[in-house]
Image (spheres, rainbow, N blue to C red):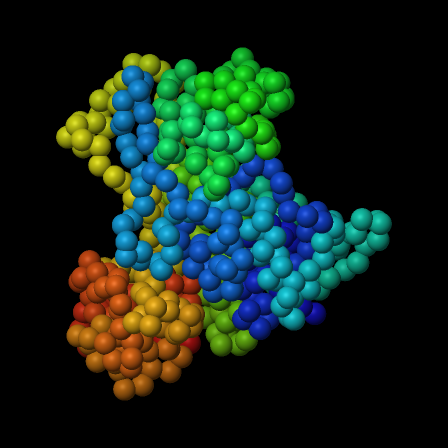
Length: 502
Ligand SMILES: Cc1cc2nc3c(=O)[nH]c(=O)nc-3n(C[C@H](O)[C@H](O)[C@H](O)COP(=O)(O)OP(=O)(O)OC[C@H]3O[C@@H](n4cnc5c(N)ncnc54)[C@H](O)[C@@H]3O)c2cc1C
């Protein structure tokens, strides 16, 4: 019997397999496809995701497929700049470029290669799950291989990472809550030649034009991505033919300017699963939620899901947390992630509402309001500022500043990143103003300014100053359980933490 079986080896499934395999669990992951999807999908990722990739040791293999994300400029009805999305300035709080553009298929392949090299993980590609059942001790998946043979696989726990049309979600009878977004778009990737590149903008652009809202993203190398809203009278099949696609691109390029790499029409939705756990089975990634791609968050959310779930499952499988505390820990996954997904999707829809306004008068009013709000001078908005914190779940009962936010990853004096030197478990991080407690079982204590730990770029100092604290209790997924400003507050946080987990 495996500890965990994962259905689907897309970005969510493969990262889940890597994190659980790295934690020493026995893991089985399968996918009905042999290869990775080659259709145009994710193009941008956040630093938080790169930090997870760092943990599983794939950043060297991933970086050749990445570049920093250029600013995105939003242009209104009359072609005027109305908003500018950028990334947080250096020093970078997570130790990585805050937003990158990347090519999804080779990055997925690098992740699969990493998992294939893990001794505790078995990977069955070209293998479809066709039935799911569970009992008090575990989950049974029936896998069908390409030759039609069926084979049961047994695991103590299972994670459904089988994408938006999730078979497992359907088998479990879990419905989707509709967050009210449903629009047809064409997504096009072009490899643009020198002649074409000379014609194109040098930043990414949101054309907030009522006649046809659309997006241009500057991808890595010569890759340029268009996301083009379709009008009610347009046929998705016709516009996604090479002729139809070039016709829509004619505002920017002709067929002499590049090679049509791949194009696909989509309906963009905003959906979230009603429940994220049914007994021993969890949903993660697109199986649990779908959101419009305006802030490039779908894959990021899937990686956040499995980073949240993996350490909790590992703690329960290893027996570090037992009984009622184990149940509470596993339930906190859905509580935390569903609320976060709902809130971020609401914010993404807000960004979409700015981009997609089809009424000219309302679009003019939008432009006027955005410009009035910034006093007529468009300011940079870091994309990361839009991300919400965790609001509920395994967090300190008292809402201390910084609680539920992502803890930074300072660079140390020798240039290494904190996680590489100090690991990924539960950590108590202190600045020089607070003394470490005499004993802290179950925690790695990182006393900055002592123990040879120096915050080389001032990232930790800036974070502590922003939240007015001197200590943070940090979870294995880098989210902050709670903070403290003095010794009494620290004692209280530690007592709350012990009570929650033991
Ligand atoms: C146009 C577009 C642009 C996007 N841009 C971004 C972006 O910039 N940034 C971002 O973060 N996200 C973006 N996304 C979202 C992102 O691509 C997805 O959220 C992400 O790929 C989902 O990963 P997943 O692992 O959850 O699901 P998937 O990638 O769909 O993987 C699911 C896997 O499960 C397998 N499977 C399904 N059923 C079974 C079964 N019964 N048995 C076995 N295997 C099964 C499938 O073969 C598949 O490999 C975008 C999406 C689109 C469409």
